[in-house]
Image (cartoon, rainbow, N blue to C red):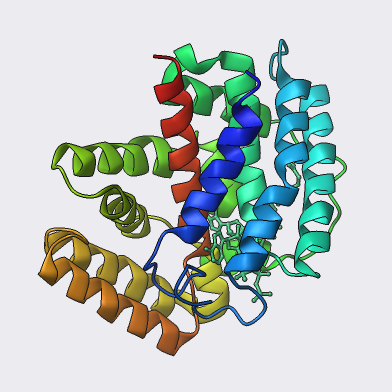
Length: 271
Ligand SMILES: CC(C)(COP(=O)(O)OP(=O)(O)OC[C@H]1O[C@@H](n2cnc3c(N)ncnc32)[C@H](O)[C@@H]1O)[C@@H](O)C(=O)NCCC(=O)NCCS
Ligand SMILES: Nc1ncnc2c1ncn2[C@@H]1O[C@H](COP(=O)(O)OP(=O)(O)OP(=O)(O)O)[C@@H](O)[C@H]1O
């Protein structure tokens, strides 16, 4: 599937430009991110096209294996270098390279006919193999997982990407079925993801309080009828203000929205 690399970059661009997102980089502002802005996010997304293309090529015609896991990890780490070169050293898409990159590989192996669940299960089967060449660095995500006892980005992949397949996609489709504008459908999907996910970006920057604030705030938006309704929109603005005050942003939820949009494109493409 030649289009997989393009679908992946499009998903990152659609996530970054979606506005207004709470405390994240969007078309309106950099949220709480001092070293990121929308032009950097877009440069980073474009710089990742060769990475996603290479992941798709490597996985095509293969089955999950230790060898494939290590080839993909090498390509993914080269992608992180391309990202850092494009942003001048900022982490714009590390989590997204991991999550969307594995799904690109899953889609290349399984084909769109496998549906979102089939693609995610295949990607998860690759992620299960150990990354024996991983550098032993204490990342922000790893520290948050250890301190707060959560599964983080690795756990999300091992579990079959549940926040994209079981939460993000159904929320996106349900919002579209209600007839809301596409941007609101995507924002509602982000709220559904945020209401459930243990996001190590929030935990690292703002501890349990930031994670609880994000989950409760997102639930209030949904209880207010979603982002297309006045009450939901007021709740979204309040959530943005609360997270900005805590200087914490839901980067992991943003990655899972990009994963949701990628799966949505892949599975629509088969028709
Ligand atoms: C597993 C990864 C994410 C590294 O994990 P680490 O603990 O070091 O995380 P780090 O803090 O650097 O970044 C984690 C990022 O994941 C995202 N995230 C946070 N919480 C979650 C969550 N619950 N679910 C999904 N994503 C999340 C955020 O964007 C966060 O910034 C990954 O970068 C990795 O191992 N890459 C190696 C290359 C590889 O194997 N690639 C495979 C093919 S692409
Ligand atoms: N629109 C977005 N705005 C900000 N982050 C996003 C966005 N979309 C996805 N992300 C994800 O959020 C992560 C960036 O989070 P963060 O800035 O907290 O990273 P960090 O380098 O771990 O932290 P710090 O900057 O505190 O050192 C990226 O890995 C990226 O995948």
